[in-house]
Amino acid sequence: MKKLNLLLFLTLFCYQTNLHAQTNFEFFFSHSKNYDNVLVKEVISAERLRLESGEKVQLIGVRVPQLTLTRKNIDIERDEYGFIIRNDENPETPIEEKAYLYVKELLENQYVRLEFDEEKKSENFDTYAYVYLTETGLFVNEDLLKKGFAFLRISPPNLKYETLLRQAYQQARNEFLGVHNK
Image (cartoon, rainbow, N blue to C red; front, side, top):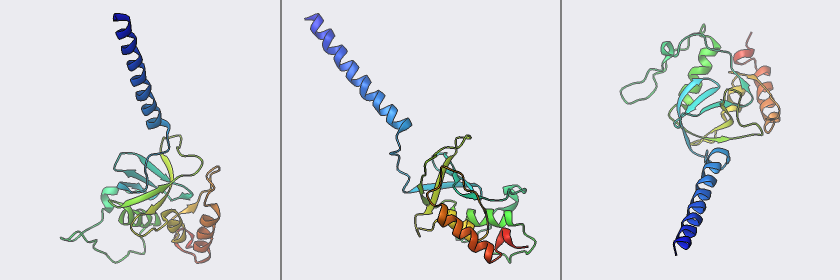
C-alpha cells in the first residue's frame, strides 16, 4: 500500500511539474503574448518607447536624429483640463526636438498595437515592432517617415513593410519635409 501511495504521489508530482515547466516555456518563448492593445507609458526618444509592462520597443524602419537636449527641457505644456497648449513653432527648433515632441504627443499614455517581423529583439533586448495607434489605426513608423521626422533604416530580415516605408520616405524627400529640408 505504501508503494502504491508513493507511486501515485510521484506520478502526480511529475505531472504537475511537467505542467509548470510547459507554462514557463510558453511564458518565455511563446509569441502568444497579446500586443493588440498595450499602453505606451513613456516616449524615450522619437523611435523608442517604454510600455506599461516596462518593455522597451524600437520602431522598425526608422532612424530619427538623436535629441541632444534633456527631455525635462521640452516637456509638453497642458492646460487645467489636460489639453496640450500649442505654442507658436519656433523655426529654429531642431528637427530632433520636433520629432520627439510629435511622438510624445501622439503616443504617450495611448494604447497601441504592435506588429512584429522576422527579428523580434535587438542586441539591447529592445523589441522591434511596427506600431499602430489603436484609436485611429495610424501606422506610426510610416507616419514618421512621411512627415520627414526620420530617415529610412531598412535592416534585413525585417522587410515586411519595406516597400511602404520606402514610399513614405521618398514622399517626404520629394516634398523637402523635415530632415530633407535644406
